[in-house]
Length: 456
Image (cartoon, rainbow, N blue to C red; front, side, top):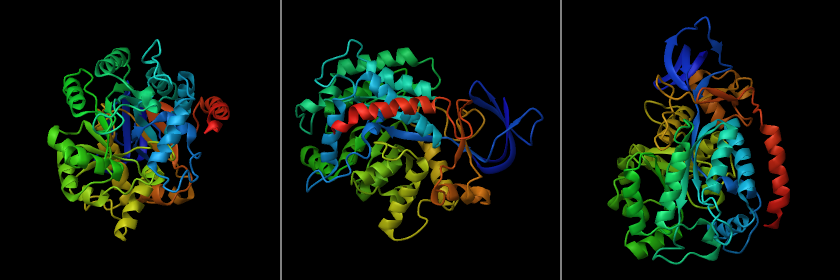
């Protein structure tokens, strides 16, 4: 198929009047002008956004923890409510939640998602007859929705630093190292032929995984044929940082950097609390900072050192994490605004080459995010996967914006969803803001909420 774009954000920047040839989900050619047999895109074209960090099941209780649970209400009291939700969800429920969530992601411009999946077992820790049943539910949900998925099963073994035994509420997460390897191997064998599904691993955090376990998993995974990413929560909370210093004698990111060869396959999720030395070393490593601005704000985590990290050349992407927000536009707006509040200046997350903040944020987070998806996407170029988003210029704020300001307007001015159409792997999943299965899946999701979540 051939598609013509009047305005398109290529790897090298904005361009006009280009025709793309797409074969088997891959952009095989980009030429000047409109070829006679080319179908026209409905608006300006940008690369699809990568969602670097998702816990699909958490979508089922957004908005239900916005009351003061105690005088010291924090991430940790929110986590208690999340654990209670886990006792209510079956594999069938998980699939319904994930289907709805992934369609919502597509509707707002995410074309791929890294699923940090740690709900493996029944509420009391009992194993299902198929140990991969929950992983399969999430992957099948992605296939139904049409989003590309990097499925990252979580390895979780301890309740805290010092190899503390897991709490009863954490039993649905727990694996031995051998069990975990078997799970990942089985998933890779099952889905390796699907070009929209890839497999990564997710050691949960330094508090939930021992040094020996992490070393074994990283060594094993470096030789695995999947060659997928390593996702890990790191330095999200000051309590975690303090406990890591007490146990290991170092801050979490510093400890990780001193023990492992971090590179673009590593997604360091949150990395909220870094000192200056960690900012510099993490940026130099090539690892990706997985920033989740809305969730980090909702949980009171803190503010990532975005300005300093980007000045050091650090790579970053964005994630919707707990899904209090499922819009990359709002996530990027909050990312920039958090830096403005911190530094009391404007237009901070940009570069001399790309002074427009919207373009810098969108282009950088799609490009860098793709590094940890095991998927050739994130930029529009010959040889890349055709994961594309067209903007809705019928929205007033975008209707007269010059192309250099289109993404500025979409992120910082438009309150309507600026996405018109979404293509994943060369296939239209959203056309004229509609998904074929949206109404049916939304009805199922609403029914599930009435049955399951009101116990919180």
